Image (tube, rainbow over all chains, first blue to last red; front, side, top):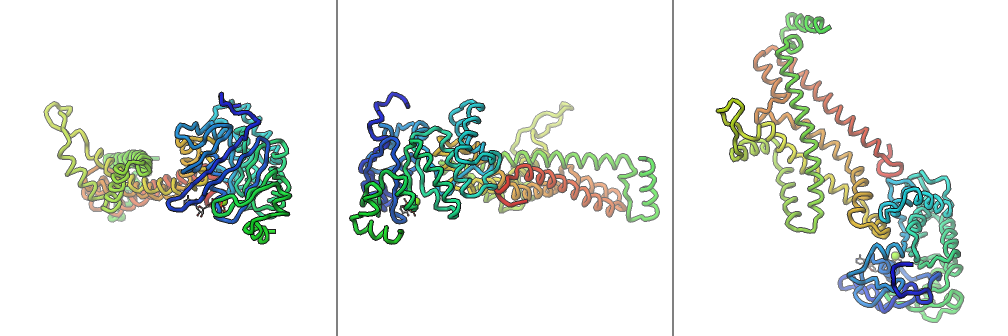
Length: 252
Length: 254
Ligand SMILES: Nc1ncnc2c1ncn2[C@@H]1O[C@H](COP(=O)(O)OP(=O)(O)OP(=O)(O)O)[C@@H](O)[C@H]1O
Ligand SMILES: [Mg+2]
């Protein structure tokens, strides 16, 4: 585990308390709170513009917050003295648009951060990177450039790239939203396997059947607040809030 | 071999007096071409290198948090892009040249400026081409999506690592076609150094036909051909570079 923080696995690995975030006058997050235990998979769903991406970006300090607290393994993220590198080793992120490095092959994409950021041995990194590409079912594509891969393959390289930093928590922001329906499945399978391996996952997704299947807990956001949450069975079949019902009615 | 060529052109000058390729049979005139060409190449290479350095520094300054630096760079770009390079040459040489200190020449009694006219031409033309290079590199850097930089950040890279390993390698590839054009333009613009009597190729050719009016057509022909070859060589090298840097699926396919 990291440094000498008093965090232990029986405490939430990510703890979000009363988080407020504004862009200028516009308040995007209006007091959001929830906890995630190690190994849990949670899904955040909600209408476009409700602040899902913003929330997830605050967790690895890609965006800052105005009020409240976000703790990862007991460490406050929104602290001026935060060691950003330490945070980003713990928290991996996968984006909707893959954001691979187009001038690097799949293997080089996966190897770059461990080599350049962590300064690890090339031999070890390469072995691990090859194993990760195999794990996301991309054996044989090591030397392909992103431009030569399908969207689904690129997204799986992006997942492997993030895993190469050996994070404790993975953030997924609508990672299948830009994909063809046929390739959505291969990416979801990869995430499902990851979750089954015990990775803590926070997913923003519009794939309801997938959320129902993998999530331990679902959070529904609307206009910057969590309107309703619960385990998938109660959430999907027994929603209480009219906004949740309306949303689910449109989507399902 | 050389004798055959020399006697061929000597004969041609007699049968066709308007086509006197005097430099192909008079060694002293040939020496002027060689010296002019070497000055042109020297000037081109130095200006290309210096203008690239200016371009990189300028692009960096334009993205700097200091408003003063940004303002300074913007002023420089506007000044040098929007005025004729010939006027810039004259300004550097005649206006700034008079303020530069002089040193005693090798003969022990003449005073020579520390900066020769070739030196001023290098500085002036580099600043001219550099102004365009700043914009070209800047556009290349700006073409790299914010999301790509965010991915670097999420992987724990700092700003320097992000620029060194991702942004600059990609920006270079985006910039190359425009850079190619600008450098070709720069090589052509070196001929304007004739205005401050830099003994480059055009200067030497004009001198030759001033001395031998019959050589004018021949000299012009040689000028055209030489510049086609020079610019061709540069464009060829740039295209090769573009091709080696080409990534499958990124930018224009080839
Ligand atoms: N950098 C920014 N500057 C200003 N406003 C922003 C910025 N990023 C997001 N917003 C605004 O914040 C609100 C929430 O955006 P966010 O991207 O978090 O929504 P979302 O729930 O992820 O939506 P979607 O499902 O469309 O991805 C939106 O109204 C958006 O316009
Ligand atoms: Mg979003």
